[in-house]
Every structure is written in C-alpha cells, then in structure tokens.
Image 1 (cartoon, rainbow, N blue to C red):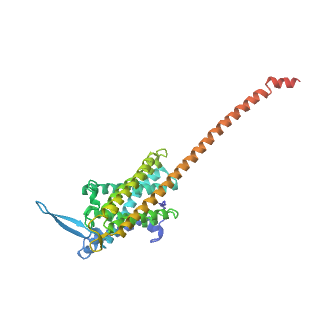
Image 2: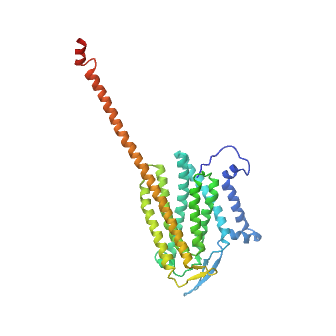
Image 3: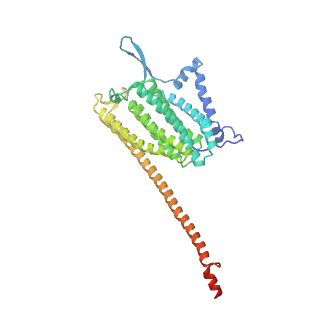
Amino acid sequence: MGIRKKTNKNPPVLSHEFVIQNHADIVSCVAMVFLLGLMFEVTSKFAVLFITVQYNVTISTNGPEETAVNHFHHGIKDLATIFFYMLVAIIMHAIIQEYMLDKINRKKHFSKTKHSKFNESGQLSAFYLFSFGWGASILLSENFLSNPVTLWEGYPHTLMPFQMKFYYICQLGYWLHALPELYFQKTKKEDIPRQLVYIFLYLVHIAGAYILNLNRLCLVLLVLHYFVELLFHVSRLVYFSNENRQMGFTIWAVLFVLGRLLTLSLSVLTVGFGLATAENQGFDLAAGNFNVLFVRITVLAAICLTQAFMMWKFINFQLRRWREHAEVQTLKKKQIPSKGKSKKDKANGVNGVNSHGADSPRARKEKSS
C-alpha cells in the first residue's frame, strides 16, 4: 500500500487527491444515509436490506419446552448487505491506518519499501486476528471440531445460524473493500497484480463455498488459514521493529506446510469421500443441492490448484531468503580475510623499515662502504 502524503494545500473538490484524502469521511456519510433511513417509515424497508441480515427462517425445536431458533439462508438480497459492510470495512481501514499505523510509522521512520509493507501487514494482522477469533468461537459453539462428520452430514447445509451468516457477509465485504483501497492507498503499479491475485482468490473461494452451501468446510479452512497468515504478518511486524528477530518466520514456515496438508486432507475427506457417499445425491438448484460429480471435482480442483500455487510461492520465497542469507555470509567471509591481509601488510611494512631503514646495522654498513 502506498504512502499518503498530507499537504497543507486543499485540493479541488471531487478531484482525485480530494477523494483520496477524504475517502473515509465520504464513505462515512454514505453509510450514515442508510442508518438514517431506519428512522423513517418510508425508507426503513429499503435501509433494512443493507443493514440487517436477510432471509430469516424460524425453526421450532422439539423438547420439554418448545423454543424458536432463527436460522438464515443466502439469496440475492445479500448483495445489498455485503455492500453496506464493505463501506464499514473502508471506515475501519482508515481508522486503523490513521490512529495506529501512521503514528508508529512517524516514530520508526521506515523507508518507503518498509513503510508500504508495514501498512499492509498491520491492516491484515488486525483483520486476521479478528476473523480467526470470531471464526474459532463459531466452530466451538457449533461443535464442528469435536464432530467432523457434521462437515458433510446432512448436506446441503442451506440454513446457517446468525453468527455464521454474518461472518460470511463480513468476509465478503472486507475482501471487496480491498479493491477500492488499491486506489485510496495509492498502491504502486508493480504491487497491484500481486494484490489482485490474492483478493480474487479469497473472493472466489469464500463466495463459491457460500453459494454451494459448503459453509461449514469453508469456515474450518478459513480459521486454519487465517491463523497461519496472522503468524506471518505479526512476524513481519516484529522483524521491522528488530531485524534480528526472525524466529517467527521459521515457526510460520513449518505451520504453513502443515496448514496446506490439513487443508487438502479436510477437503478430500469432506468433498471426495463424505459428499460422494452421502445419501442426498443430485443437482437441485431450488433445494440448494449441488452434490454431483462435476461440482465435487471442480471444488477439489480449485482447492488443490490454489494450494499448489501457494506452495510454489512459498518455495520461491524461502529460496530467495536463503539466497540473500548466503550472499550476506559470503560478503562477511570476504571482508574478514581482507582486513587480516591489510594488517599483515602493515606489519610487514614496519618490519621492512626496521630491517632496511637508515637506523638498521645493514644500512650503516652500506653507508660506510
């Protein structure tokens, strides 16, 4: 992410510089319009589409006392809710940048390269920490970890508890907000392709799992992935504060490989074996059932290709680090002999003066002869 230069000059209204400097205030005003819409009966029905979670289904549970439980399914109206929480993500991004990251940057005086990477890791660390904690709490409350069979048992999982649906809405809103942030943060042209790739991968996988009703599997994989990514970005923040602290990268490297293996194992177990042997087979768009061979193969292929791409990037990253470390060690080895040689030459020069100089016995003999 680029560096926002604050100047005393007021740019022209609605110019690029004006929008970039004041984008958080502009977005806040747009979000406030939707909130104010709740106050009036004429606009409340329209505003509710953007602010509240849609497609509520009330289910009565059998027991000594009948209780009503609210569940939710997905639909086209979710696009409005995702848009609103995309605006919220832009506002939160600006708050973290201005009140946390910019203050640290002014104290540390980072270079332009470190400044950009520090901002990126700072923003993603906050998001990954929040998403990992929230996702882990949902997994524990729904007992998905203690009973892995629930990942595919009873498919299609069209109904979700409120926390799970709201989690997906916020996830899609956050990764969509990353697209306009490329403009707001003045991202360098050479960094845009890299960021577009991982934004696209997040959106495709999360939206795909949400539409295909694979929300339980996706939630487990997201929590696992976010934990590993959180460790990487925290390690990078620690490295920027002290370049000698690189232990976090070593731990991250081990967990990264384990995370890829667990992701592939859970995906094959759920999609390749669990859904393949499930009783509810067939394609039914109205019922949300996509349990057919073509869809299963497509899902597994997308997951495997993504994991292979991530491993390829990881190997290149590690090779580059080892190459840079080897170059540093080679330079240090070259500097040590050169210093030792200069000291030896200096010592030989002094001895030569003592042995052949004007004050030596040999010189006096040559002078007398």
